[in-house]
Length: 87
Image 1 (cartoon, rainbow, N blue to C red):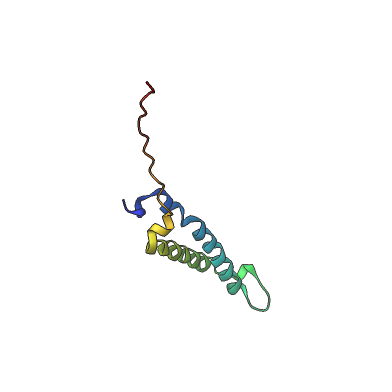
Image 2: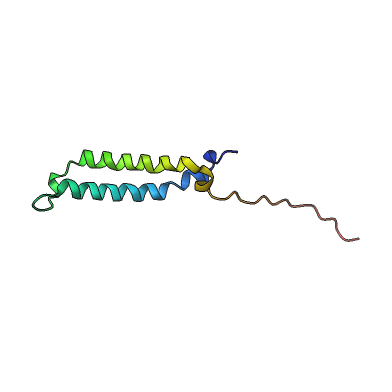
């Protein structure tokens, strides 16, 4: 089965994507507010959020390049064999 269709694959990109979103939004807001002084009211928030969502899209997209690495190792299958009772 392909790693793309496993729960670990879809859970793994979440944390880096969230971190990427907040880092990108913070950087874009600071750059957008820079001038004589930082004024958060002058930030174009639609632009900042669209840049953040674009970064999330790219972050998750990079997970598709190596799905087996992102999903992690496949758990070992354990086979339990029946044991005959002692005679």
